[in-house]
Image (tube, rainbow, N blue to C red; front, side, top):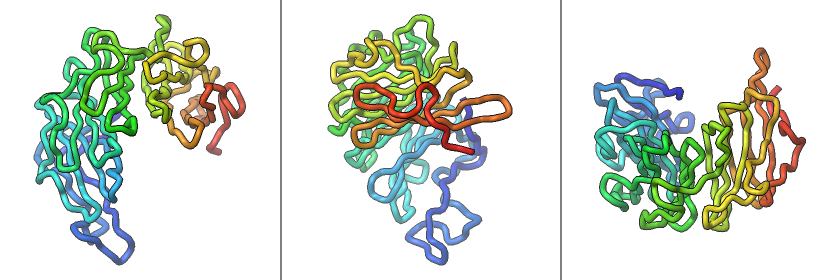
Length: 289
């Protein structure tokens, strides 16, 4: 997994219009706003919009994982160094909870998720909720809000979980969660998740063994819905990876990279609620030159 390391500090880009500065945002285009300035290696930084003109940022500060909120005026909301999520964790991810707060996931043996409100208070079990047991080999987890204060979690290895607004596991326990890919010949990775607006979610990923990008939808009970429960292949050329997923209206859109050696294409596909590709299939349409 690629990360960008900043040994001295973690920074966020300056968000100011030319000739104007708002609040605490830096007035010097060569100087960014520090989110943390501890003298440690700070990596794996991720950020997401907070819905109010600011951002939530999570990062790994050597071993600990920390989270910060910066408001629309560039002010740090959660202290000079942010909030300590865990003393030791890897692969942190973050998502808005669509209620003014955020979800943070990380791996520390098991895969954990914690919810924070707008003020930075923990809303779930101290230390986080275990969403995927270490025995399943899950690695890192991407998330998406379900619209009610809960979230969907997509774990490496083909596993999925849904959490209620209070942090209860809804799709099985941590050692036996739902699966978006149960094919034993697959080695799924890079999975992204998007809510479907009906209590379920769609997952997009690529398979290490075949280098093919797949999608699947789980209903509100965590049951696979498309293609008789088998993954829907979006490509067949091989060397396809790094999918990204977005819901818009009644459709889902997936983009991914297709590495043809000297030619790397960015492909896209539009998928109906019933799991039917709407554009050229397989392989979608190319969106770069």
